[in-house]
Amino acid sequence: MSGIKVLVVDDEENIRTLVATLLSTKGHSCATAADGTQALDKMTGERFDAVITDNVMREMDGFTLTKEILERYPGLPVMAMTGYAGDHSAEQAIEAGGQEFIIKPFSINEFLIRFDKMMRHHRGRWHC
Image: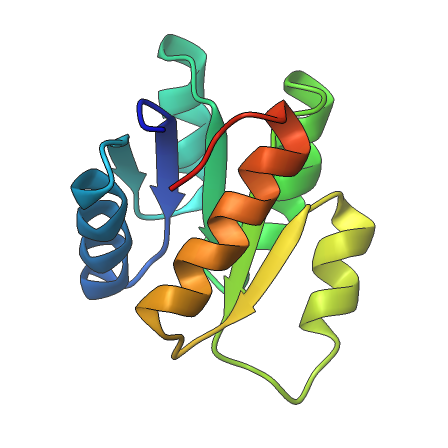
């Protein structure tokens, strides 16, 4: 099933574009933001069904962004991404309220499986 509106947040333009393009090919609509502050600004004017965010960004990191999102929009599914596999990013992302976590670089299949799992868990009906 398609039609999920996703906000993709990453300070690396190529990652934002890759994730947004990948989700768009599955019928989802995407908006992007380069950092947490920009993401919260976009969320003020638009409704999103999910957020995918990098953990390490300038201005506001993904952990802080996730906490802010869930304070303002309780229950909104958030997937965290990181390029740092050696630290405690997964634990921190889950503690912040994230529902799913993926380490960069990731395969397209792994990303879609994790996204689908997150949305099915959240809505009980979305399938990529």
